[in-house]
Length: 352
Image (cartoon, rainbow, N blue to C red; front, side, top):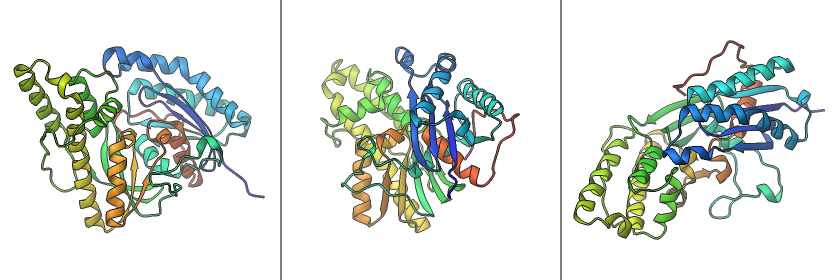
């Protein structure tokens, strides 16, 4: 009889407290508690985030175990996000994982948050109506093969990763300053939109013309990215036009969002085309919170059809920070006996 491995995953890198249970890679539960308190400040406040994690961690883990329909004694190991992220937030998840690991006398597995995003494509969802999500074009989502390229785009990271196996990854392109998600959020703040601004720009862009305005596309060597110049040029463009017409933002909000979004999409597409040419790998995955952007998903799907690539786009529920990806990453490390000691400490900056 086949022995399944049951992993409890804990994610607390930023402002979402999440716990999930997987049996091998099959998802049994995935619970996420967000934090609305940060909207009033226009961004995540680290001290408030860590306090909220302390309040949320016990009920979230308890709910994940209940929804999975298991007893806590059936858990074979606990995986947790060690970094990168906010140190106070990471400390809550790390400490809880250590304590529960000791209490249950089961192994502890530390996971790089970025590795979790990459391996989100290997989450197996049950065939129930709740999880019957399909990719663009109506095709059922399938697992990537190895090697493949992953474009990881989030609030803190923009990277092109060559994925040779679940545990062997090589960053071949990264941002030298701001990430794509940060460019979206900062531009949204300039426009007076609420935090998080990325989804609002996506929504407003639907009614705008992406060719209305032209913004700076930085020329960065090789496969690296830069979005600080775009952010600065957008700021100066808005400042100069508002000086002429105080109602400029309100009158052009949809067009501004569409044009900015298109500029970011163009930068991402240019780099991934170059990466495919350099590596010869024509299978690409999209990961991270910004991969939920509708225009990115649409244009990358069109790009793959045009160039006959194989592309994998996650269901929306797995694009943002979640413990399911941490649990699956933990499963792959468990199979290789890659366990952490109980003196392991969280790391705010943790390279892949």
